[in-house]
Amino acid sequence: DLRVDAERRRAIMANHSATHIMHAALRKVLGEHVTQKGSLVEADRFRFDFSHNGPMSQAEIEAVEDEVNAQIRENMPTGIQVTSPDKAIEAGALALFGEKYGDEVRVLSMGTGDARRYSVELCGGTHVERSGDIGLFVITSESGVSAGVRRVEA
Image (cartoon, rainbow, N blue to C red; front, side):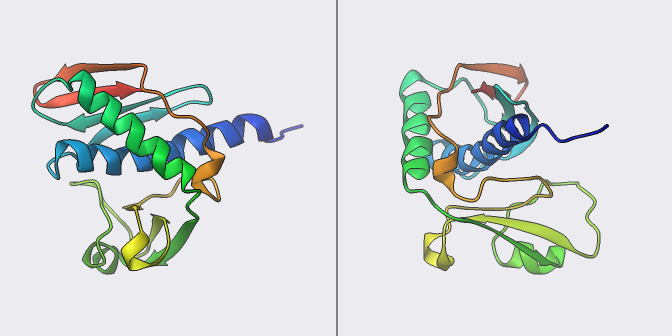
């Protein structure tokens, strides 16, 4: 008898949604050069690899944490739209460079309206309905993975 573990699924959805907010926060704090290079999302933690040329300072780590938690407190709605990859990217959605996309893609938006959208990315995963469903966000470590690639665990 196969069943979805609803509690585990909710925890993974929360952590997965947090990666999107953190990606936007990293770009805000460190610069637009930051792009996702990989991730692992589990029920109790996640890791997120991204392009950046050096270690984050403690002040930068705290700024990212503060920004993510501020967006969580905003209790932003999430929305999904299905469109072509070209239209999604033209509308400002972040895509993983080098990924192969089909004729249709899912675009995750966190926030409302063009002026209030905080994060817009191509994503086929599951997400919380509102950012407030994520809960407190804490970065537990930051390290180097390879030249020009950093890893945050939270």
